[in-house]
Length: 563
Image (cartoon, rainbow, N blue to C red):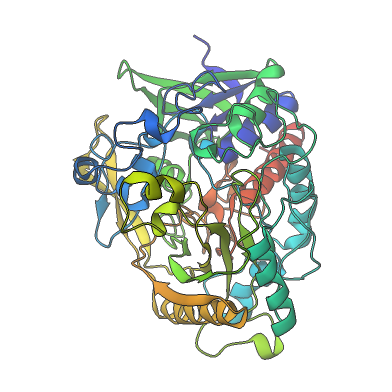
């Protein structure tokens, strides 16, 4: 068994797939390690063509599942029969909560790239400059200009459909043709345009091909099946399995090793570099060491940081590169489950094509200057949502059988529309994860304990998120407008980030401007761990851009013998 490589990549999700592709295409013999089993594109998507009636429960979560999978069931969809195989079992992979934390993850080749929401947005200098302008946490070591060419590169490769709208707080990009709004969404768009000067409505920017093809395994246009989370046999949406990992494999430079839990980066105190990683084979429980010149940790914000925290030595008694004591701190997410919904009796003669797995988007309009600035909270939020015709059951509550029932189920229901707020969580040092060495997992490794909550800033923002959603729907003439602000805990957005933040120096951060560990320059961390602030948009596109940029830098530095 070969143990020496040019590069090691830990994790095969959004970031890991990109790291593998870029390093392999640049000529590095690369070992890619994944703690979970193999998942091959199409071949290992067991439910991709299932219908609800194929399941005894109609693909509804049972009470038994809720009791045994209490944490994973908090999102609803993660424990459905159609998707649960792409998420972990709570009993097999426990974690600890001081405050409720919803840690939803999947351990398999492809990780959450198979189940992500596909919404793809750029951060902007409103985000990169916010911390230093407001005196929050620390300054980002990069700005939009540093990442813009990499956003272009990533978007062009993965395929992002959307619409350019010309807003500074919502940077335009390299997009395929946008998906269509339906009549109710278009009505709301027109109303917002007429009633507000500070906001617009557009179709979501999503990593789903709408025209042509993209590199990978037969990637073609979306079929509007809305079964994305089960794995797309058409490769219409971007995943590591259909795109980046096949590209890496094509080079002949990738060795992919599933069922391999990386738990430590090995530090060579003589060279002041990392020499490799220690791995537990999940099937045999045997341990191995693999060596490399450069290491990319891309296992997710929690997993990558856990590895760094477990990587202790005389030089780093509190974890690799942790002189700042920032490892595990500043956990962020995007807070959601707040907004409004409404109905209309109009547009009865209109419908829509297929099951579009994308929604509408209203970009941030708070705290971007002038009259948009608020005194009650910092940063901002956007809205995601959409309109649809309700199920026939809404119309026939008093009917359960007979001729009339059969007639009614052939008719579409009323139109309804919803807006869900998506807000920024500030980086708080005391929002953190720690390791519990008293509670070990099945492989003898410490379990993670979370202690993180939203605070006054987010709570004040949520009030505005609800109020503005209701106001926009009311102004558009919708009926039965109802606001909601449901129970939210950090993690529910499934955008955990910030646990090994980027910064200008090792005194206040873990990573530099190229995602290198300040004190161990041949170790890169390019997943959500690196985020210095969260922004208010889905972060995966940023992780991909950071990864591609870091890989380019790593190879250049290797050639210069700097790392």
